[in-house]
Amino acid sequence: MGEGLQPRAVGPRIAAIVPAAGRGERLGGGTPKALRALGGRPMLVRSIEALRRAESVTQIVVAAPPTLVEVVAQLLGRDVRVIAGGAERVDSVRRALRAVDDDISVVLVHDAARPLTPSSLVDAVAAAVLAGHPAVIPVLGLTDTVKEVGPDGRVIRTPPRDGLRAVQTPQGFRRDVLAAAYALKDIPVTDDAGLAEALGVPVMTVPGAQEAFKVTQPHDLVLAEALLARCAPGDAPAGADSRGGTDSHGGLDVRGGSDVRSPG
Ligand code: C5P
Image (cartoon, rainbow, N blue to C red; front, top):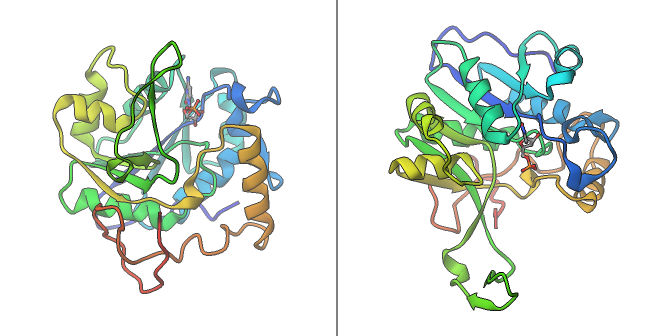
C-alpha cells in the first residue's frame, strides 16, 4: 500500500476520478473486474497507487459497485473518497464528479482497468491541461489496419492508418469543461473526450504508454501478470516511469527527461 496522498500547500488542485463500478463480464471470473487480483493485489489498488505516485494528483474519487462501497473504502484507505457507481460508466463518472472538492480546477478520468499506467503519464496529461488545453487524451499509433465493417460483414472502407490513434486514460479536463460535457444527455460516445468533442471543445493528444493498456479480456490479465513478474513486488513494470522524448504521432509532448522510449 502507498503512503497516501500528500497535502500540497501550493499549486492547482487536481482530482482523479476512477470509474470502477463495472462488472467486467468479458474478463470472466465472477468478481467485479476492478477487484480481480493482479500479482496478488486487486487491479484497482494498483491503479490507485499510480495516481498516488503522480505528483499532480491531490484528490482521488472512486466509483465502486454500489454493494461494495464499504469494502472498497476499507481496501483503498482514508485518502480516497469512495462513492457508489451507476448503471453505465457515464453514470459512474457523473456521480464521482459531484463528489469532487469545490476547489478542484482540473479533473482526470482514469479507468480502474488500466492497473499498470505509469504515474509519469498521469502527470503528463495533467501538465497539458495546466498548460492551457481544455481537454487532453493519451494516444498510441495503431499497428493493425482498421476497417469499417457493415452489419452484413462486408467491408465499407479502410481509413488511412496514419491518421488513427488508440485512446487511453487518464483523460484530463478543465473542470468546467468536464461538467458541461457530462451535462449533455444521450450522446453515444465510448470515452470522456467524446463528450468534450460533442461540445465543440478542442481535444489535444499526448503520447500514451504501452503499459497503460486496458485489462479487458483474459489474455490481458496474463500479459499484465507477466509484466509485473519482471519487476520487484510493488513496482511498476520495468521502464514504466522512464519514458520521455517526442511524440511520433503528432501529439503534444509535455514530458521531460532524456530516456527516449517510443510510445508507438
Ligand atoms: O467495461 P469497460 O472496460 O469499458 O469499463 C471501463 C471502466 O469503467 C472500468 O474501470 C469499469 O469498472 C468502469 N465502469 C463503471 N461503471 C459502470 C461500468 C463500467 O465505473 N457501470
